[in-house]
Length: 320
Ligand code: ADP
Ligand code: MG
Image (cartoon, rainbow, N blue to C red):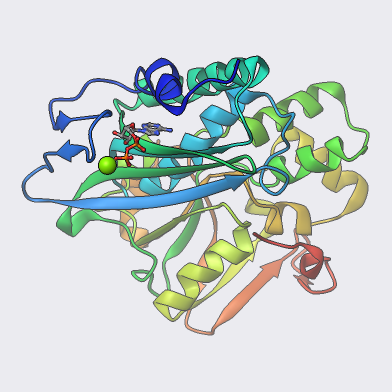
């Protein structure tokens, strides 16, 4: 028996998220009524995941619920904002019993992450059509401490919060590439259950000069910082944080495009002056290069020779 939109909202969506005192009125009315924190900026970001483009309809729905929220929290992290509220718009191709189970699992994955960050789901929309998921998040950050893409200066260090290339390798494995089963499992977890670097983003307030989350690939995303800040960069490939899986892959293929251009890892890439080096120690981040006044990105191989990004296969990657 088909389930009505109202039953869906009541059974699946309304119980999601946590109670917060700054939610005057949540799900169930025409608008949510929210009480923003005085003296703080409201940070807002939205992302859509489309079936067949950003995920496969037979992906595990629990992981998908996690990921739909995680990719948005990653944007808040890159702005050094603290998560508060979310809205969720779901387009569903009809709701039968199988879809209800799918939605319950999706809701479970979403709720797990929402609880972890004290995030309330305050509203949304439910419509019929090809499967797609849109999440909007709202967070808070003190006005002077928001991290942006335009604050980087020549001479500063470039840092990464963790390894890159794993999610892209997981897609290759899905496409038939053979790797060590332990590596296959590790990279699949990185693709399907990314961990937004929310705490790190908060701790970078007052330390980083610019930040971005790596969703489209390191070169593309660092490129946004460089362009907005009017600087260039040199990256030392032997300093790139890499998982055992990606290191093994590089040993076999020398395909540096994978860690440099592979997206979906959701690590933070940020810049900071050397005077902050001591304060950055202990945050688990790795310096991968330095900003320069000459525009563009130069990559140096472990032997010191330059890597040509276009012949390294970088152009073969498409980005959404
Ligand atoms: P309206 O017709 O006034 O836009 P709806 O009937 O679409 O309201 O939704 C009723 C209530 O349920 C609203 O508070 C809306 O925010 C909430 N809602 C609808 N779909 C979702 C969803 N997928 N997740 C969370 N809340 C939802
Ligand atoms: Mg209304």
